[in-house]
Image 1 (cartoon, rainbow, N blue to C red):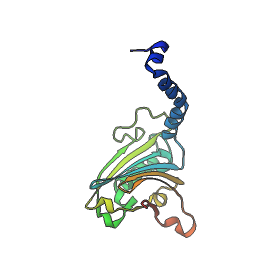
Image 2: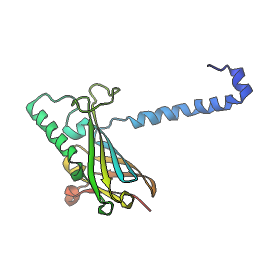
Image 3: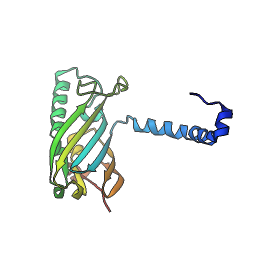
Image 4: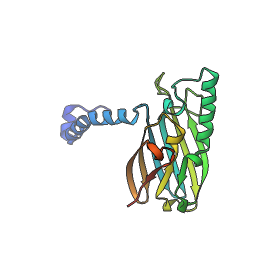
Length: 194
């Protein structure tokens, strides 16, 4: 049902419609930012809920394997196999605070270019992503205050991790940058809490 301007005015809906119209540029920019495809950057969303810690990762495929299409050469196929094996061993990439006593659960990898899982059908051709969900089952997930992240040492194209964390302590945004020098081989600590 479509309302006319007169009907909106009578119902007080004009103010609501104006608010939506005013918010449209912001919402559009926010939607574009959520789907931004920036080489060297990766997005991690961490949810600590009940007995689980779930990590959702969204990355340009280039950060993980060095290209953004289906592998063509034997070397590229080998790079994909190695990257997939490393991602499936997520308990080596994400070391959750030992106080939470977590064990790796299901790992879901999605990439149209690599033929993994159920990839995003809106993924633009030539700018392939790799999305993943890593679930950890814990005896005391609420006790977790940090995750040591080993992505920088494993995936050389990665320069920055933008993260959002939702836990019983609140919601947090964090940014990790690739360490340099002697710290380059060390995990980067993603911490939260008060």
